[in-house]
Image 1 (tube, helix red, strand yellow):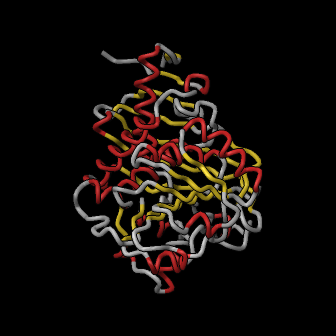
Image 2 (cartoon, helix red, strand yellow; image 1 turned 90 degrees about the vertical axis):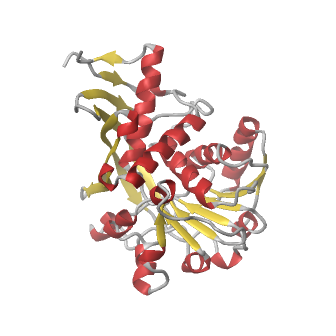
Image 3 (spheres, helix red, strand yellow; image 1 turned 180 degrees about the vertical axis):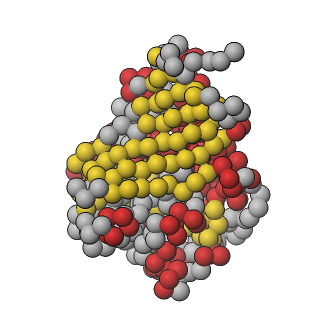
Length: 353
């Protein structure tokens, strides 16, 4: 029997999945990719001279019965120390049956988690879940404290995601805007029941914590790698803007970390080495070219999940994880989970195609 595809729109996506389920779906997608490298292709982007950018993420997760792609478009405006988005459009996920290739569903809009249904951040749930998977593989199992750089939608999702993989107790949040720090504490304190403290300097967010996470739009390093201490873990998410640089829209590539952070990290985790090479990412590709690190030091999280490589092996190691670009396997895994939940609720619109 041929099943008709489902159209899922923004009103169907609000709080549709819990953060724990999202993290586990993304973890399963990366594990399959680690076992079969043919299941994912690096994100591709085109840049229009006006600053409009289109991204496409392709992947397949046979265990979830789905393959397909996610695409999104935004108007990007590079600033001196950060990248802003005057316009963000709804992402679109297209799902096909992994067995026979039938169209299963089209998902239009931002997927938000049940814990923060109104936290609209384009691809924010997938990004946070991907960060949580890598952090879980590399941070010390007994890590309970976090230094968080950023206080917007991505930071909120990331805090919830890390709570699924570590028993957090204390969080220090730093943002250049004191008001944003205060708002983050006021909103996320009641949601998480954690001890969240706003701090006035980047150093306060790094010293004495078990994990450091940067979820910013920064184009410059947000902390000094000399501040890192034995046993700490660092996760960063800022993506590549090489297309903007090559197109003449901005002079410098983006990065959240400095070379010292890479030099001092004994374990270097990453989502996709191929993505870092293709995008000439400033905090990975450029340090390799300068001899700060070597490509063979980078370990993809899918390889760890598939049992092909090791992550952290000692408690006193400084570990680093670069969530360096959204991958199609994660979008498809999350999309398949959403499709399942929407069907259970009897929502969505059947397409007669």
